[in-house]
Amino acid sequence: MSTTWLWYATRGAGMVSLLLLTAVTVLGVLSVARFEAAGWPRFVTTGFHRNLSLLAIGFLSLHIVTAVVDPYTNLGWAAAVVPFASNYRTFWLGLGTVAFELLLAVLLTSLLRGFIGRRAWRAVHWLGYAAWPIAVVHGFGTGTDPWSAWALLLTATCAVAVGWAIVTRVNLPGSDRLSGARARFRESVTRTRDGTWP
Ligand code: HEM
Image (cartoon, rainbow, N blue to C red):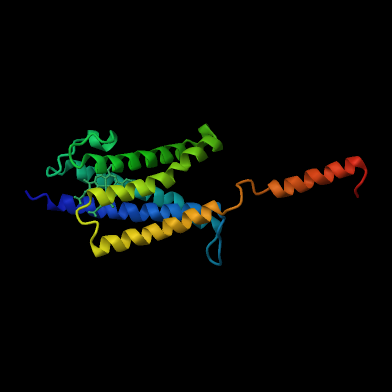
């Protein structure tokens, strides 16, 4: 029986995963920026961010399973969890495994956020930014025709979106949005004690 469909499924699911990962990254930054607009309340961004990340993990699982069971590549199941364990395009495939594991860490810590605390959750969440370029390099190194016009266009569009997200994130004010108000309050209390104000 021909296994060409497995090859198409691997490629299709890989590309969809990259698009979803891009959307998840952009939505994550919009959530931190507390973006809202007419007809788009803040909770919609957060909801999309969460649900699309689960969808991305679903497509990634499909991408990995179809890649592993494809007899042409003969990856072996170890390649799905142990980076650089496969004989097939060892380095490029290993990068895919690394990206997948980083995303799994982000997912698991998000599910366990109530137990591990916000600080640890946040530290691991930064890994999501690292997973994206690693996955792109994996796609270029492993994909059948990543330099074709359609693949380049999709990847370039994703790169612009993620680049915008990173620049926006870096330029956001600190995460403690009440720090200004708190400092002003502290100052006014001090002045009152000194008897200089009001
Ligand atoms: C975040 C994780 C990953 C992402 C976003 C991702 C995405 C992609 C993309 C975009 C391609 C190029 C498709 C094409 O142009 O043909 C690709 C190729 C491929 N990926 Fe992944 N991948 C990831 C992880 C993995 C893992 C863990 C494995 C296997 C253990 C894997 C196996 C493959 C294989 C075998 C190909 C080559 C398909 C072909 O022959 O064209 N990927 N991946």
